[in-house]
Length: 234
Image 1 (cartoon, helix red, strand yellow):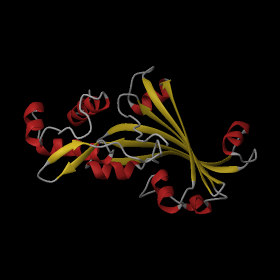
Image 2 (cartoon, helix red, strand yellow; image 1 turned 45 degrees about the vertical axis):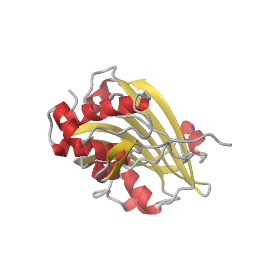
Image 3 (tube, rainbow, N blue to C red; image 1 turned 90 degrees about the vertical axis):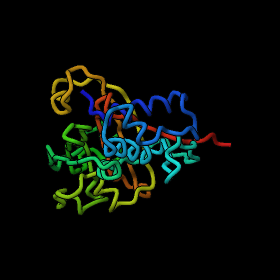
Image 4 (tube, rainbow, N blue to C red; image 1 turned 180 degrees about the vertical axis):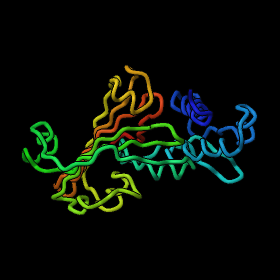
């Protein structure tokens, strides 16, 4: 069962993404949403903060919130920072490293990363949890030749993705998005039924031609969406 703040967020997002609420349309005031959904101001504020952080609405003091104008940015997908998103939305966030090892990559990984077969990588599996609900399972490779300090990093304070974003500037990124059905192992991790539709984001980043990291992040289909805003190139 969805948390109430997730249901409110989904309702508003659906109206925006469908075009029912166009750019500039006023979002109902906080007290109006509180009455409609029978919830607290804190819940409504959490929803609006999340929508603003995702670029879907613009919050204006005294004037309320409106649907945001499309951005001229041409990056379709931003590099996600789970910790930052949760902080902006006022959501409790925690993560757990489920697996950590240093292993040589196989031929398939070598082809994806452009590195020689048998190159040793730091391999990490991380579960991301928000408000006690699993939001994503992440499998990550970190190139120790590019980020040698990762070998000794315990990742106690920040998850691997956040840690990398704060320390290693990237110059190029590649995203691949696909849909999969959760097998029994993934279903258990994400607390969903076996066969549940999931969204998988594969991301690879480089720094001036040197490979940095590869992440494969699996989200339950009903708990996440990837939003890109862009404009046509003249």
